[in-house]
Image 1: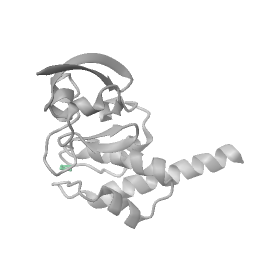
Image 2: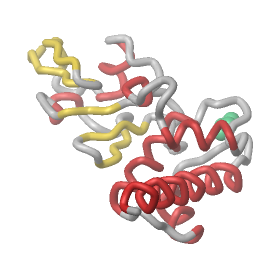
Image 3: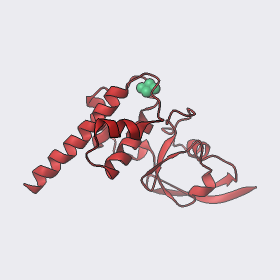
Image 4: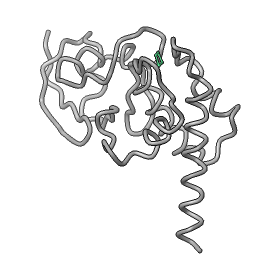
Amino acid sequence: MSIDIELAVNGVRQRVSVSDDDLLLEVLRRTGHTSVREGCGVGACTVLAEGRSVSSCLARAVRYDGVPLTTADGLADDDDDVVEQFVAAAAMQCGYCIPGFVLMGHELLAENPAPSRAEIAAHLEGNICRCGTYQEICAAIEATARRRQADQQRRSA
Ligand code: FES
């Protein structure tokens, strides 16, 4: 049986027809949101639903009817501070896992603006980078936190 839902991705709403058991990952990819990637258990399918990370390969699309979703495509191309620090730290090799890690970084920094390295590692636990760039990924998130704190201090000075 097909059901119409409102898919709200990166500020754009569209009606889509889904089956009751369609996964959010499948629906996102077939509607062009290809930064969301399949890779069971590696976190590459991560999206943010109202700011909270969700494994879209485990979520049924019908549960996200009208829920604002963010994918890596929804981040500002040339003005996203987490992405900027990933680039500066060379926190990628093949890049397959990176959209999920960037979104997890945003989620963590929204909850905890000054996470320790251990807190970053704990938050990212379960996301797998097969290229092994964990140190660089953690360093990029740490650097984003430092940059945001410095910007805030500058603004309040
Ligand atoms: S950069 Fe290749 S899987 Fe993470």
